[in-house]
Every structure is written in structure tokens, then in C-alpha cells.
Image (cartoon, rainbow, N blue to C red; front, side, top):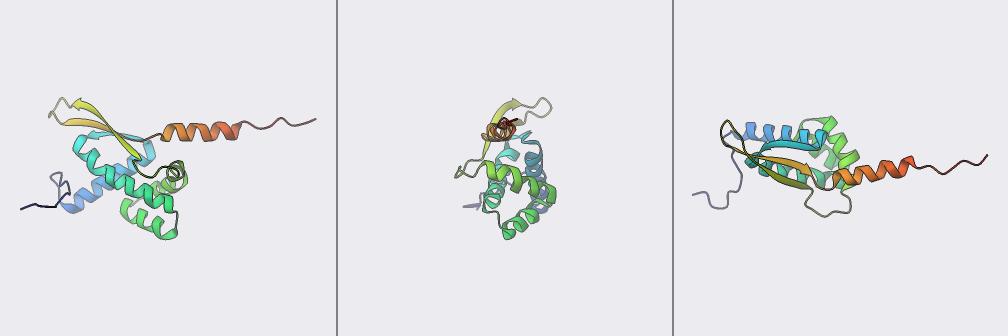
Length: 137
């Protein structure tokens, strides 16, 4: 019986599944939006949200845990430098899943996994930094 076993197996071994989810989350961190199947998006959502929580802590230990899970140091740098500070006032729910419909080849449900309010938070910060006070002559 599979009572209380919530892991989505996705038809893969545990090593393959962990590597695939890590790559998916790294792509989400780098591109801010990923199109994938609905099942993979739901599985990657929990990993992405846990990584943002680690990023919000900002300690060396949490950075090492994130790199160990994601296997990519550059993605962890982007996570800790850009994404986590954008969500500092938000307690949870950092990602959104938008359903797209069926894929033509195998009728799999497609979805977009993206950050919630990330684009608006990033757009306002550089706009405020660009406006400089007038210099007096």
C-alpha cells in the first residue's frame, strides 16, 4: 500500500528524478519561466519554493545546501542575489502554474511554471536606481 507516500515518481528512478527536477529548477531560476508537463511542474514547484526559502535565509549553510541540491553554482548565485531578495516580504507561494492544454504528440497536459510577481519586483528596483537627482552646477 502507498499510504502517506506523496512523492510523484514520474516514471523515473530516484536519481534520475532528482537530477531532472534540479535541472528544471535551475532553468526556472535562469529563465524565470519554464514550459513543461503539468506533473513535472507540480513536482518542481516544491523544490523551487524550498530553494527560495533557503535563499531568504542567506547563510553559508543554506547556500551550500542549495548548491548541493541544484548542482549548479551559477544558478545558486542568481537565486541568492536576485530572486530571494525579491520575495523577502512574501511568506510562501513563490511560484505559479499556468495550464496550457494538451500536447499534440502524446496528449500530455502542458503547463508554465513561473515566479509570482518576480517581474514586477525586478522592474521597479532598476527604475528607482536609474532616477538620479539633478546635479547642481
